[in-house]
Each structure stands twice: as C-alpha cells, then as structure tokens.
Amino acid sequence: MDSLITAAARALAVGDPLGALKRIALREDAPALALRGTAMAQLGDFPRARILLRRAARAYGAREALSRARCLVAEAEIALASRDLSWSSKSLNAARTTLEQHGDRINAAHAQYLEIRRLLLIGHLKEARHALGRLAPNALPPPLRAVHELLIAGIAVRQVQARAARGALARAARAARQAGIPALAAEVQAASLALTTPVGRLVARGTARELLLEEVEALLSSRTLVVDACRFSVRQAGTVIELARRPVLFMLARLLAEAWPGDVPRETLVARIFRAKRADETYRVRLRVEVGRLRRALRALADVIATKQGFAVLPRRGQQIVVLARPVEDEHAAVLALLADGESWSSSALALALRASARTVQRALESLAGAGKVQALGRGRARRWVTPSQSGITTTLLLPAPVTGD
Image (tube, rainbow, N blue to C red; front, side, top):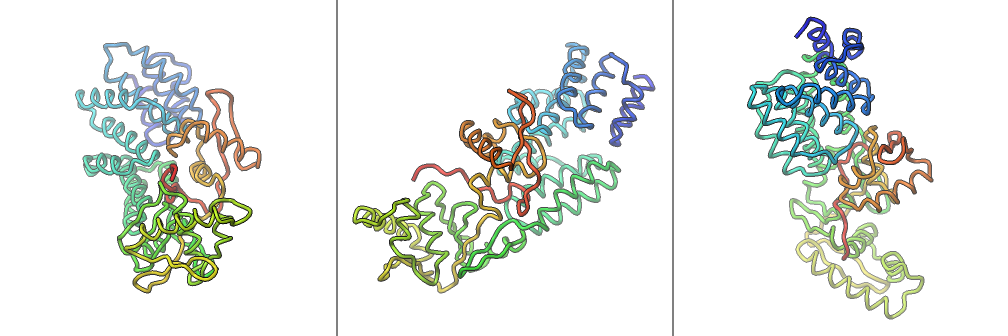
C-alpha cells in the first residue's frame, strides 16, 4: 500500500474525511475507491458512498476476498446509517466469516456490532443482548469499545434500567475520548439525552407529570399498580399482565385507572370503547362481557366492581393505581418516536422496526406530512422521511408492542 493510501486511511480513522480526500480524490484504483467511499459516508453522502464502495469491490476482484469483505461491511454500515434495514444479514455474516478467516478480528468485530445495532433498531433485544455477550470488548481498540458500551446502554434504556445505562454511557464517553473521534463523542453525548429527557408521563388522580428514565424504573419496581400505556400491560412489583393483544381490555383498564379512586359511568365507557353515541342495552351487555373478561385478567392484582353509575377498579393490596403514558400521545406517536433520532428513514424500515404493514406506515407518514410534522426527501425507492426532534420524545424506549385484534 503506497504512502498516500496509508495517509488517507489514517485520516479516516480519526474522523477527517476531507483530509483523506485531499490525498486520493482523483484516484480510481480499488483501495482509493474504497477509501473515497468511506470518506463520502463520513460526510453524509450515502448514495455516492455506496456507488464508490461497490466499484471498489468489483475492482478488487474475486482474488482479493479480504478487501471485498471490508467493502461489504462498509456498505452495510452505510445502510444502517441511512436506516435501510432491508440489507442482507447473510451477506454481512459471510463477510464477517471471511474477515475472521484472514485474521482481521477488528473489522470482524465491527461487522458483528453492525448486526447487533440492526437488531436493536428493530426491537430484537434478546437476540442483541445474546450476540453482544459473545464479544470481548477489552481486546478491541477504543472506537469499538465505545460502540460496545453504546449498545449496552441502548439495551438498558429499552429495558428501563437507568443505572446500567448510566454506567455504560460513562464507559462509552471514556472510550470515545481515548479514540479522539469527534463524531463518536457526539454520538455518546446524544445517547446520554435518554437519561435527562422525559420518557413517560405519570397520570394519577386527575393530574399528570413527566418522568425521567430512572423515575420510570423506580415506579415499575415499586408496589404501585401501574397500567402501562407504553407497553399495553398492567404491572405491579414484578407481576406483569400482558394486554397488548387485547386492546379493548386495555382501554377499559386505562379508563378505570385514570378515574381511580372514583368510577367511570357506563355511558362514558361505551362512548370511549365502542365509539357509540348512545349506551343502549346492546352496548351495556357488551360492556358487561368485557368487564367480566378484565376482572378475570386482573384477578391477581385488582378487582373490577360495579357501582351505581358504572364501574371502578380496586387494587387488592390497597396500593394506589397510576397510568404510565407515553411522553407525547399522538395518533402516530410510534412513527414520530423513531424519526426523532434525527436520521432519515425509509417507509419500509419504519414498517420493519414497528412490525407493521408497509401500507399502515405509509398512511401514517402521509397524515404526518399533511400536518407538517414530517418531511419527505427524494422520490421513489430513494425517498426518506425526516422530522425535527420532538419535544418529550427521546428514543424508541417506550414504543409499545404491536397490537392485534382482541
């Protein structure tokens, strides 16, 4: 490798893409094309970066398996940065295997981290945690140690573990300082916002207040009966009753919890749950059926009783009942929460992350665009969606599980 290629590679390693381009901008050989692609990616021109990396892979040819594998890993990283989550994990795993066979353990680890970051984005926390546990960060250079700790923090945030997230972010910050890469330090700082930005709202006795991550963690570990409107469940001291697949029961539980210690009139329940204008006998019968189902579902934690006007919920152990709601409750809050990371997302990537149909996501984006909350960039398959950071939304921390029919 000649001196200009070496100098350009060193410039990219410390986050200086312009310095790298000054040395190789006019060269068309395979190593220069690969480095130019990496530089363009660092500058944010992802389409051009992909073209250059594919040209580099073709220029290396079949005999340069190691270099081709590095190009594939770089292209996968660009896809992740541009929130194109449809790229093939098989290709990335094949590239990682090639890197391991040739002794390039650093880039092999980097490929593994890319796959873990993808798993985290689409909500596969168990798989991400398992894959992360197989890696040994102490043997890696500071940039990859910082990435490792950022992933630990990301998993901890989504599992509402504030202390673990804080420790991981502190270690990530130290590794980023050792790496001396400004972009990496900025990523750690942005991730730290999850600890200082409200991630939920506590609704109790007719009042609401915002909660930080550590406050949500304390609430969920307390003896308080929590109707969790973020994950569609009812929780108390480690006992969790999942209602994500029973939306009518969850709506009923939330309405009763918001009114506690009072009751909710039957007319109000019928109007809110069944969207009926008048509570005739048919709807009253349906309401009694749903109340019976909710009573059976919550029998370990609370009782649902009939009152003169309607129904009320009573905790079995005498603790108070609260509702944990999302910081911003919009019709399309889940889409906004993903877009709030500041990156540009394709509609297919949003559908994958939300486990929703592509058409459902497209309708949500069209509605948000009409309200001026999101903006489309590009056309056709190149179209991406962006939005300014939403006040009160940090990460996908409290995104609910997908809801199916009751």
